[in-house]
Length: 252
Image (cartoon, rainbow, N blue to C red; front, side, top):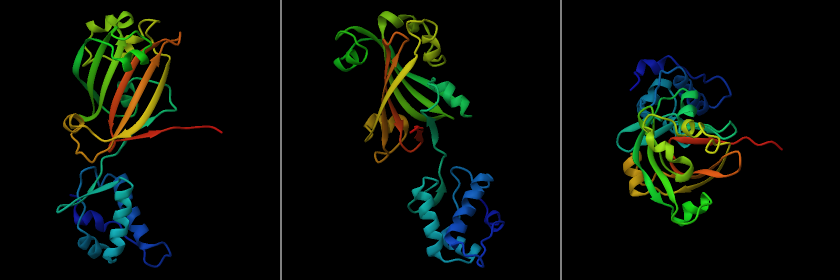
């Protein structure tokens, strides 16, 4: 927890028309920017904050409630109020790129754990997505993706065996799927189509992503196409709803 003294370095001005709750809210935001408050830090109790700033508990609570609703803080019953982890922003207006490159570009450390990697028969859903006949052989790659050692995504990728059998010789814990696919004109991904929906977590989601059953899952269905408009990848990804934010830019 940040020390009481660190909070005393920031003050509210009762002589201005700016609401006190708003001033106090901005103090906490400023402390986060200054890295006085860091993700996981517990802040003083409401009563202690009242004493520090000489303002009412109602004012303190109004500011904290707004910060909790904005995802900047979170409360744990019986323990206190804590600084939330920063959500990872995924920008859909940027050029499509692999998970590792996207995370590295944004200053994070990505890692991967392969949960399954084998040849299977395409289900009707997979066959339809890849424009294959039912029961055609496909490569199935299931991975748990981490950011800064924290589980973030469960991804299940299906690839046409006829096009992509060469990836079976690679270590997918260490290598980038898109980099491998880019080595061949028939498998290099030029276009990606994504569909997203919010779903409730499964038991497996809770176990692998280390979340509780009230945390939403952002479910993505992704199709990757080569330059000939042939689908070469179908991925179903399950993102932690409490750790991700998605940005889309549109022009009118």
